[in-house]
Amino acid sequence: MTSSPVLDPTRLAKLREALLAASYTADGCLDLLGPTGYAALARSEAVPALRATRGGSPLETLVRLFLLQQPVPYAAAAAALPVEDCLTDGWLRPDGDRVRATVDVRPYANEVAGLPSSDAWVVSDLGCAVGGAGGIGSGETAHGVARKELVLGVGGASTTLANIAVRRPVRSALDLGAGSGVQALHAARHAQRVTATDVNARALRFTELTLALSGFANADTAEGSLFQPVADRKFDLIVSNPPFVISPGSRFTYRDGGMAGDELCRSVVRGAAAHLEPGGYCQLLANWQHVKGEDWHDRLAGWVAGTGLDAWVVQREVQDVAQYAELWLRDGGDHRGPGGDYQARYGEWLDAFEAAKVEGIGFGWITLRASGADRPTVRVEEWPHSIEQPLGPHIESWFARQDFLASHDDAGLLDTRYLLSDEVVQEQVGPPGAEDPEHVILRHNRGMRRATKVDTVGAGFVGACDGTLSAGEIVDAIAHLLDEDRVVLRDQVPQSLRMLTEQGFIEPAGLRQEG
Image (tube, rainbow, N blue to C red):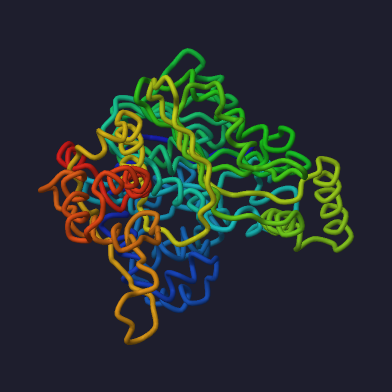
């Protein structure tokens, strides 16, 4: 196993000071490279960044060294870094009269809702910051590291999970399958103590480097599979970007769980109940199988059944088995190898899916909550449409609204005062010049960005939700205005009230005051 840089606190503090002094931060790199170059780098395209870093300033040197993995002259490195310390601790290695980075050190804007952004850095293997192992070719080793043990940096999945996580002050948080420590880095800002686990010892070393270089000392690591390293512990927040890929083998520790089908993700869901404090959340990204003759909604609901946990499962995308195989073969760099090998591996994936009667693979996220309710809320839905990130505050609000709905009967709903949620707009659809619209659409421009069709009564009701009158009083006023039977209208409204509240178009006034 190739060693990772030495974690010496004193010298690491000097390295962090040098990075800050050179503005080697997310904002600094964006200013240097510009939006075009920065976006290209996120796609693993280096040419725009190379063109933007020809001046030799300390920031340009650091971008070339750590982001572009280019050798730089020793003198240039010395002007930007405590170069001898970095050589001693293994951050750099000599290359003639130049030096090279041994790891990717990527600036990262560590943002948590309610807290100012802080500068951080994510440490990962060279070539693995974006785009999986495909960026380092198709051999069995890369930069002296066995491909199976590679540690990835920041990618689309890690940022998605970071954005959907509920960010409230907590005593304890667990990053299950930590990798390079992106989730632990976020959690360290709002948890008193963070524990990071991974089956890959190299990954835990990189997590330690990420946290220490970013200035956090409130974390510990534990090696082992899933919940085994924390068997007797409970947490207020569990986040997991697990090795969720449904693959026929276990070639890469960072992505292949080594269990049949989607069993690894199911195991995380089933195991969470024993490790959540009352009121605690577990949030994970997952893939699941669409099996012939089985409703995928039932499959996911079955994962949660009997755990006692509330659950909100959102499927964001479905791929057919060929698309899915191609995605992860490219991720592993197999498309760069001999054609015969690629075809053989492609066939292995399709054979495995055929044997399991898998017709497609769903991608999405799962949020679990230990509410202690006698009848837990379980919602499984598909939402392939655009959303607004960060979604974490909206997810927390969704669960609060479920609690309200579960504790109020129809009479209680009508007795409640409601507020129109922020950035809800009304759209009217009908032919030009018509006196009345054919359809009235409510559209929410925040969170899940839902839309729903309502009638004129519903539109009038929502428009009157300013917290002044109870729902029943608004209904009575509408009945009087339209010369409708108020009793009949009161009987009809609670069903719509539940839908509008559940989907976040309106919210009980008390919930907003509590928040």
